[in-house]
Each structure stands twice: as C-alpha cells, then as structure tokens.
Length: 311
Image: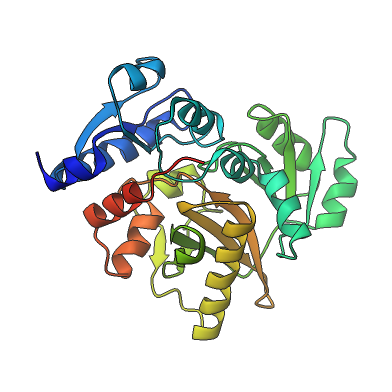
C-alpha cells in the first residue's frame, strides 16, 4: 500500500452526471483521476449517471473528489448526500455550494457584506425589457442564475434584444439576470485552502477573441488569451485577491474554488460569481494559476484532496 493510499483511503472521483455541463465534467474528471493515480492514490471513477450514490457506501469509499459541474454536483445537493453518508468531500459545503451556484443570491449576500457587484436586474416574462435596457445601458449581459460554463448567456448589443436573450436564458433556469456590461476586462482568482489558511493564486486576465468569454472560448477555441501576470499593477492585483478571498469567505466556501471578477472603465473592481467546483480541463483556469504559483497539476489535485472534509 502506498503512502497516499494509507493517507486518503479509497477515493471516488465523481464526474459526468446529468447536468448541461456533463461533457466538461467528463474532461475534468478524467484528468483528475489520472493525476491522482499517478500520485499513488487509490482513485476510482464514479459517474452518478451510471450508478446510484448509495454505491459509494456499498463500495467502501472513504473520500470523494467532486469534479461534477452544474446541477447535481455543484449546487449543494451532492454535498448534502455525502454529508448524510459521512464521506468527506472536496470543495465547499452544502450552503456555500448552493449560494455559489446561484448568481442572484450570491450577489445579494455580497452586497450585504459590502462587496461591490455589477448593477443587475432580475427579469421575468412580463418585465419592461425596454426600461431594463435603459437602466443598465447597452451592451448588457443576460444569464440564467443557476448555470455554469456560460451556458444560456447572451450579450445584448442592440435595443430590443433583451426579450430574445431572456427567452434563451429562461430555458435553463426560472431566474434570469440582466447585468451591466463592464468595460475594463474580466479576471479570475483561484483560491486554495480553508479558513485563515486560504490563499489566493495569481490573478488571470481573460481576453476572449469573440464577443465574450462564452462556452466556445472556454473549452473549444485555442485563441483565448490567459494573461499571467495579469497586467494589473501590484496594488490592483492585491486588491483583487483580497476581494476574492473575502467574497469566498462570505459565502462560506472552503477547500478550493474560483471567484470571477470584472473591472469597469474607471478601474473599479467588482465580484461577478463564485465557482465551487471549477473546471480541471486543459483549458481551465485554476490549474493555470496554480502552475504560475509553482504548483503542478498533480500536486494541485492532491492538495485539493487533502482539503476534503465534512461539515
């Protein structure tokens, strides 16, 4: 038995699932599984689409590495099941996972804690779309509150376009957000650790070649720029990292994750959303930031697994 096998026991790498992000999850999970096995961990693939969660207990798994994205993996439901079974798992707990998945409620919590967010409006079928366009200005973004990987998101550039964008987003969630466009760029901050030991990884500036950082730019295209160093001043980088750590902590997140940030044309930083089970594909951001901090992929996944816990 290897040292890693003694330390971690039998580990389920949970990926696949039934969400709209299944394909991304399959990619994330496969590379995590390979890296853990290379590190000597007794890791096994576990796809909730293929077998019931009760098999985790029946097959005597001692830990779970969650590489599921979206509903059923990132929204607190899986975390609740693992809590009931007494199996420590990676990432955030039930409440933090649910809040992180919900872009509307996470913004409300951040606002209450004094963390700036982009101006936004929750829109419904009978909303006055023209008034919302006037209030937020054009262009603006429309997104389902509970989806990841930019699924269902539209950039509205012309007057009258909000209604169509709403219809697309509403296919994925009953809560739809219209959000002010921020002209100063998009950034992300990966976070590793728990409580006072949590640390922010180097800031990444994301520069897509298309209209915005959509699904294709995230997973399919090879021309998206990821700038590390970010190009920010040292003071701006530190401010962004500090805000990300606060946003992460306010939601109750732990272990690892990512906070996406935006900047307006005047250099004001705002928190956009939290990711409590970030992607781990060859296009993913946390591995890029970890590498820039001197942590290779195998060391990263072992570090994440070390943070697995209950409660």
